[in-house]
Amino acid sequence: MTDLLRVGYDALFFEQPKTGAGRYTVNLWRHLRQNLGPDRLALLAPGDTTELTRSEGQGQLVTVPATRLRGRPRKLWWEQRGLPRAVRICDPPVDLVHIPYFSAPAVKSAPYVVTIHDLIPMVVPAYHGSIAMRSYMRLVGKTTRGAALILTDSEYSRQEIIQRLNVSDAKVRTIPLAAGREFSPASTGEDDQAIAAVRARYELDRPFILNTGGLDVRKNVQAVIEGFAAAVGSIGTDYDLVIVGRAHTDNIRMYPPLDRLVRRLGLGERIRFVGAVDDDEFVSLYRAAEFSSLPRPTRGSA
Image (cartoon, rainbow, N blue to C red; front, top):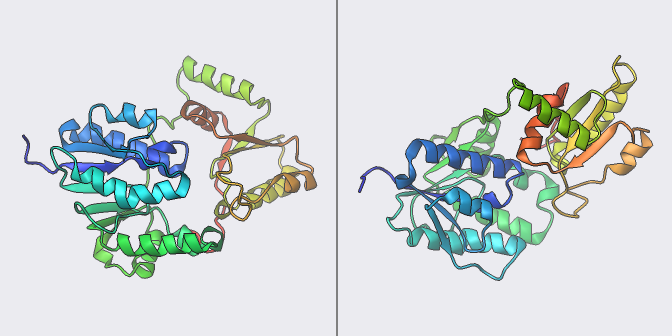
């Protein structure tokens, strides 16, 4: 048996693989598995987890019995009860737990590292409007202070974490995110065929600008649409705007409707909402696009 550090890895966001946090969670796991090897890793998940989690576990999966709770109550149960139990039953035991999103248990079964991408749920009012959400944010703000190490994506978020969570600057480390190797220019005939297929599926006949930031209010997609409307008459090529993503709830404060704005600007034929797409289509859309657009965040977001 090796005496090297053994790591437990929280797989909850494997259940949302098309979100930013989900992509981060899955791809980081794959790199850890490749570089550390199976003897040093345990993938921790609820018993009713997805097939993706089970396939990625490949003999390393540790589960606890599922709960009858659903939605946010299930998430809270996992963070505070399920995950610590999964850590306790690991055999061989783990020395460290990595939680790749903003959460941590109040009672630790092992030291833990937490990735906090940003503090938007604390900062942007639309994300903490309810009493339940404010209570939850107070809880995770308190519990993550006990982490052995906090990872974040940017120096801006690092400074916010230090100030708002009142933690030592030595405890917070910035590790910028990177694009996967698959996000590269098309290089083969097979790539060209995939690009042609995704164009045909979504009826993308014209050159297009791609926006993949998501539809929630902090992404400020309204500004992207208004900017596109302002520019569309002055650029020589007839571009479309293709927007990837879907609303995760029917909360219009978090996911403001955009159809009315598109109609008012007379852009119904030029703006395409394609919804959530799978990984292969996601790469092909990037390769097919003339430009990729990043919305300017709303005030108070990282």
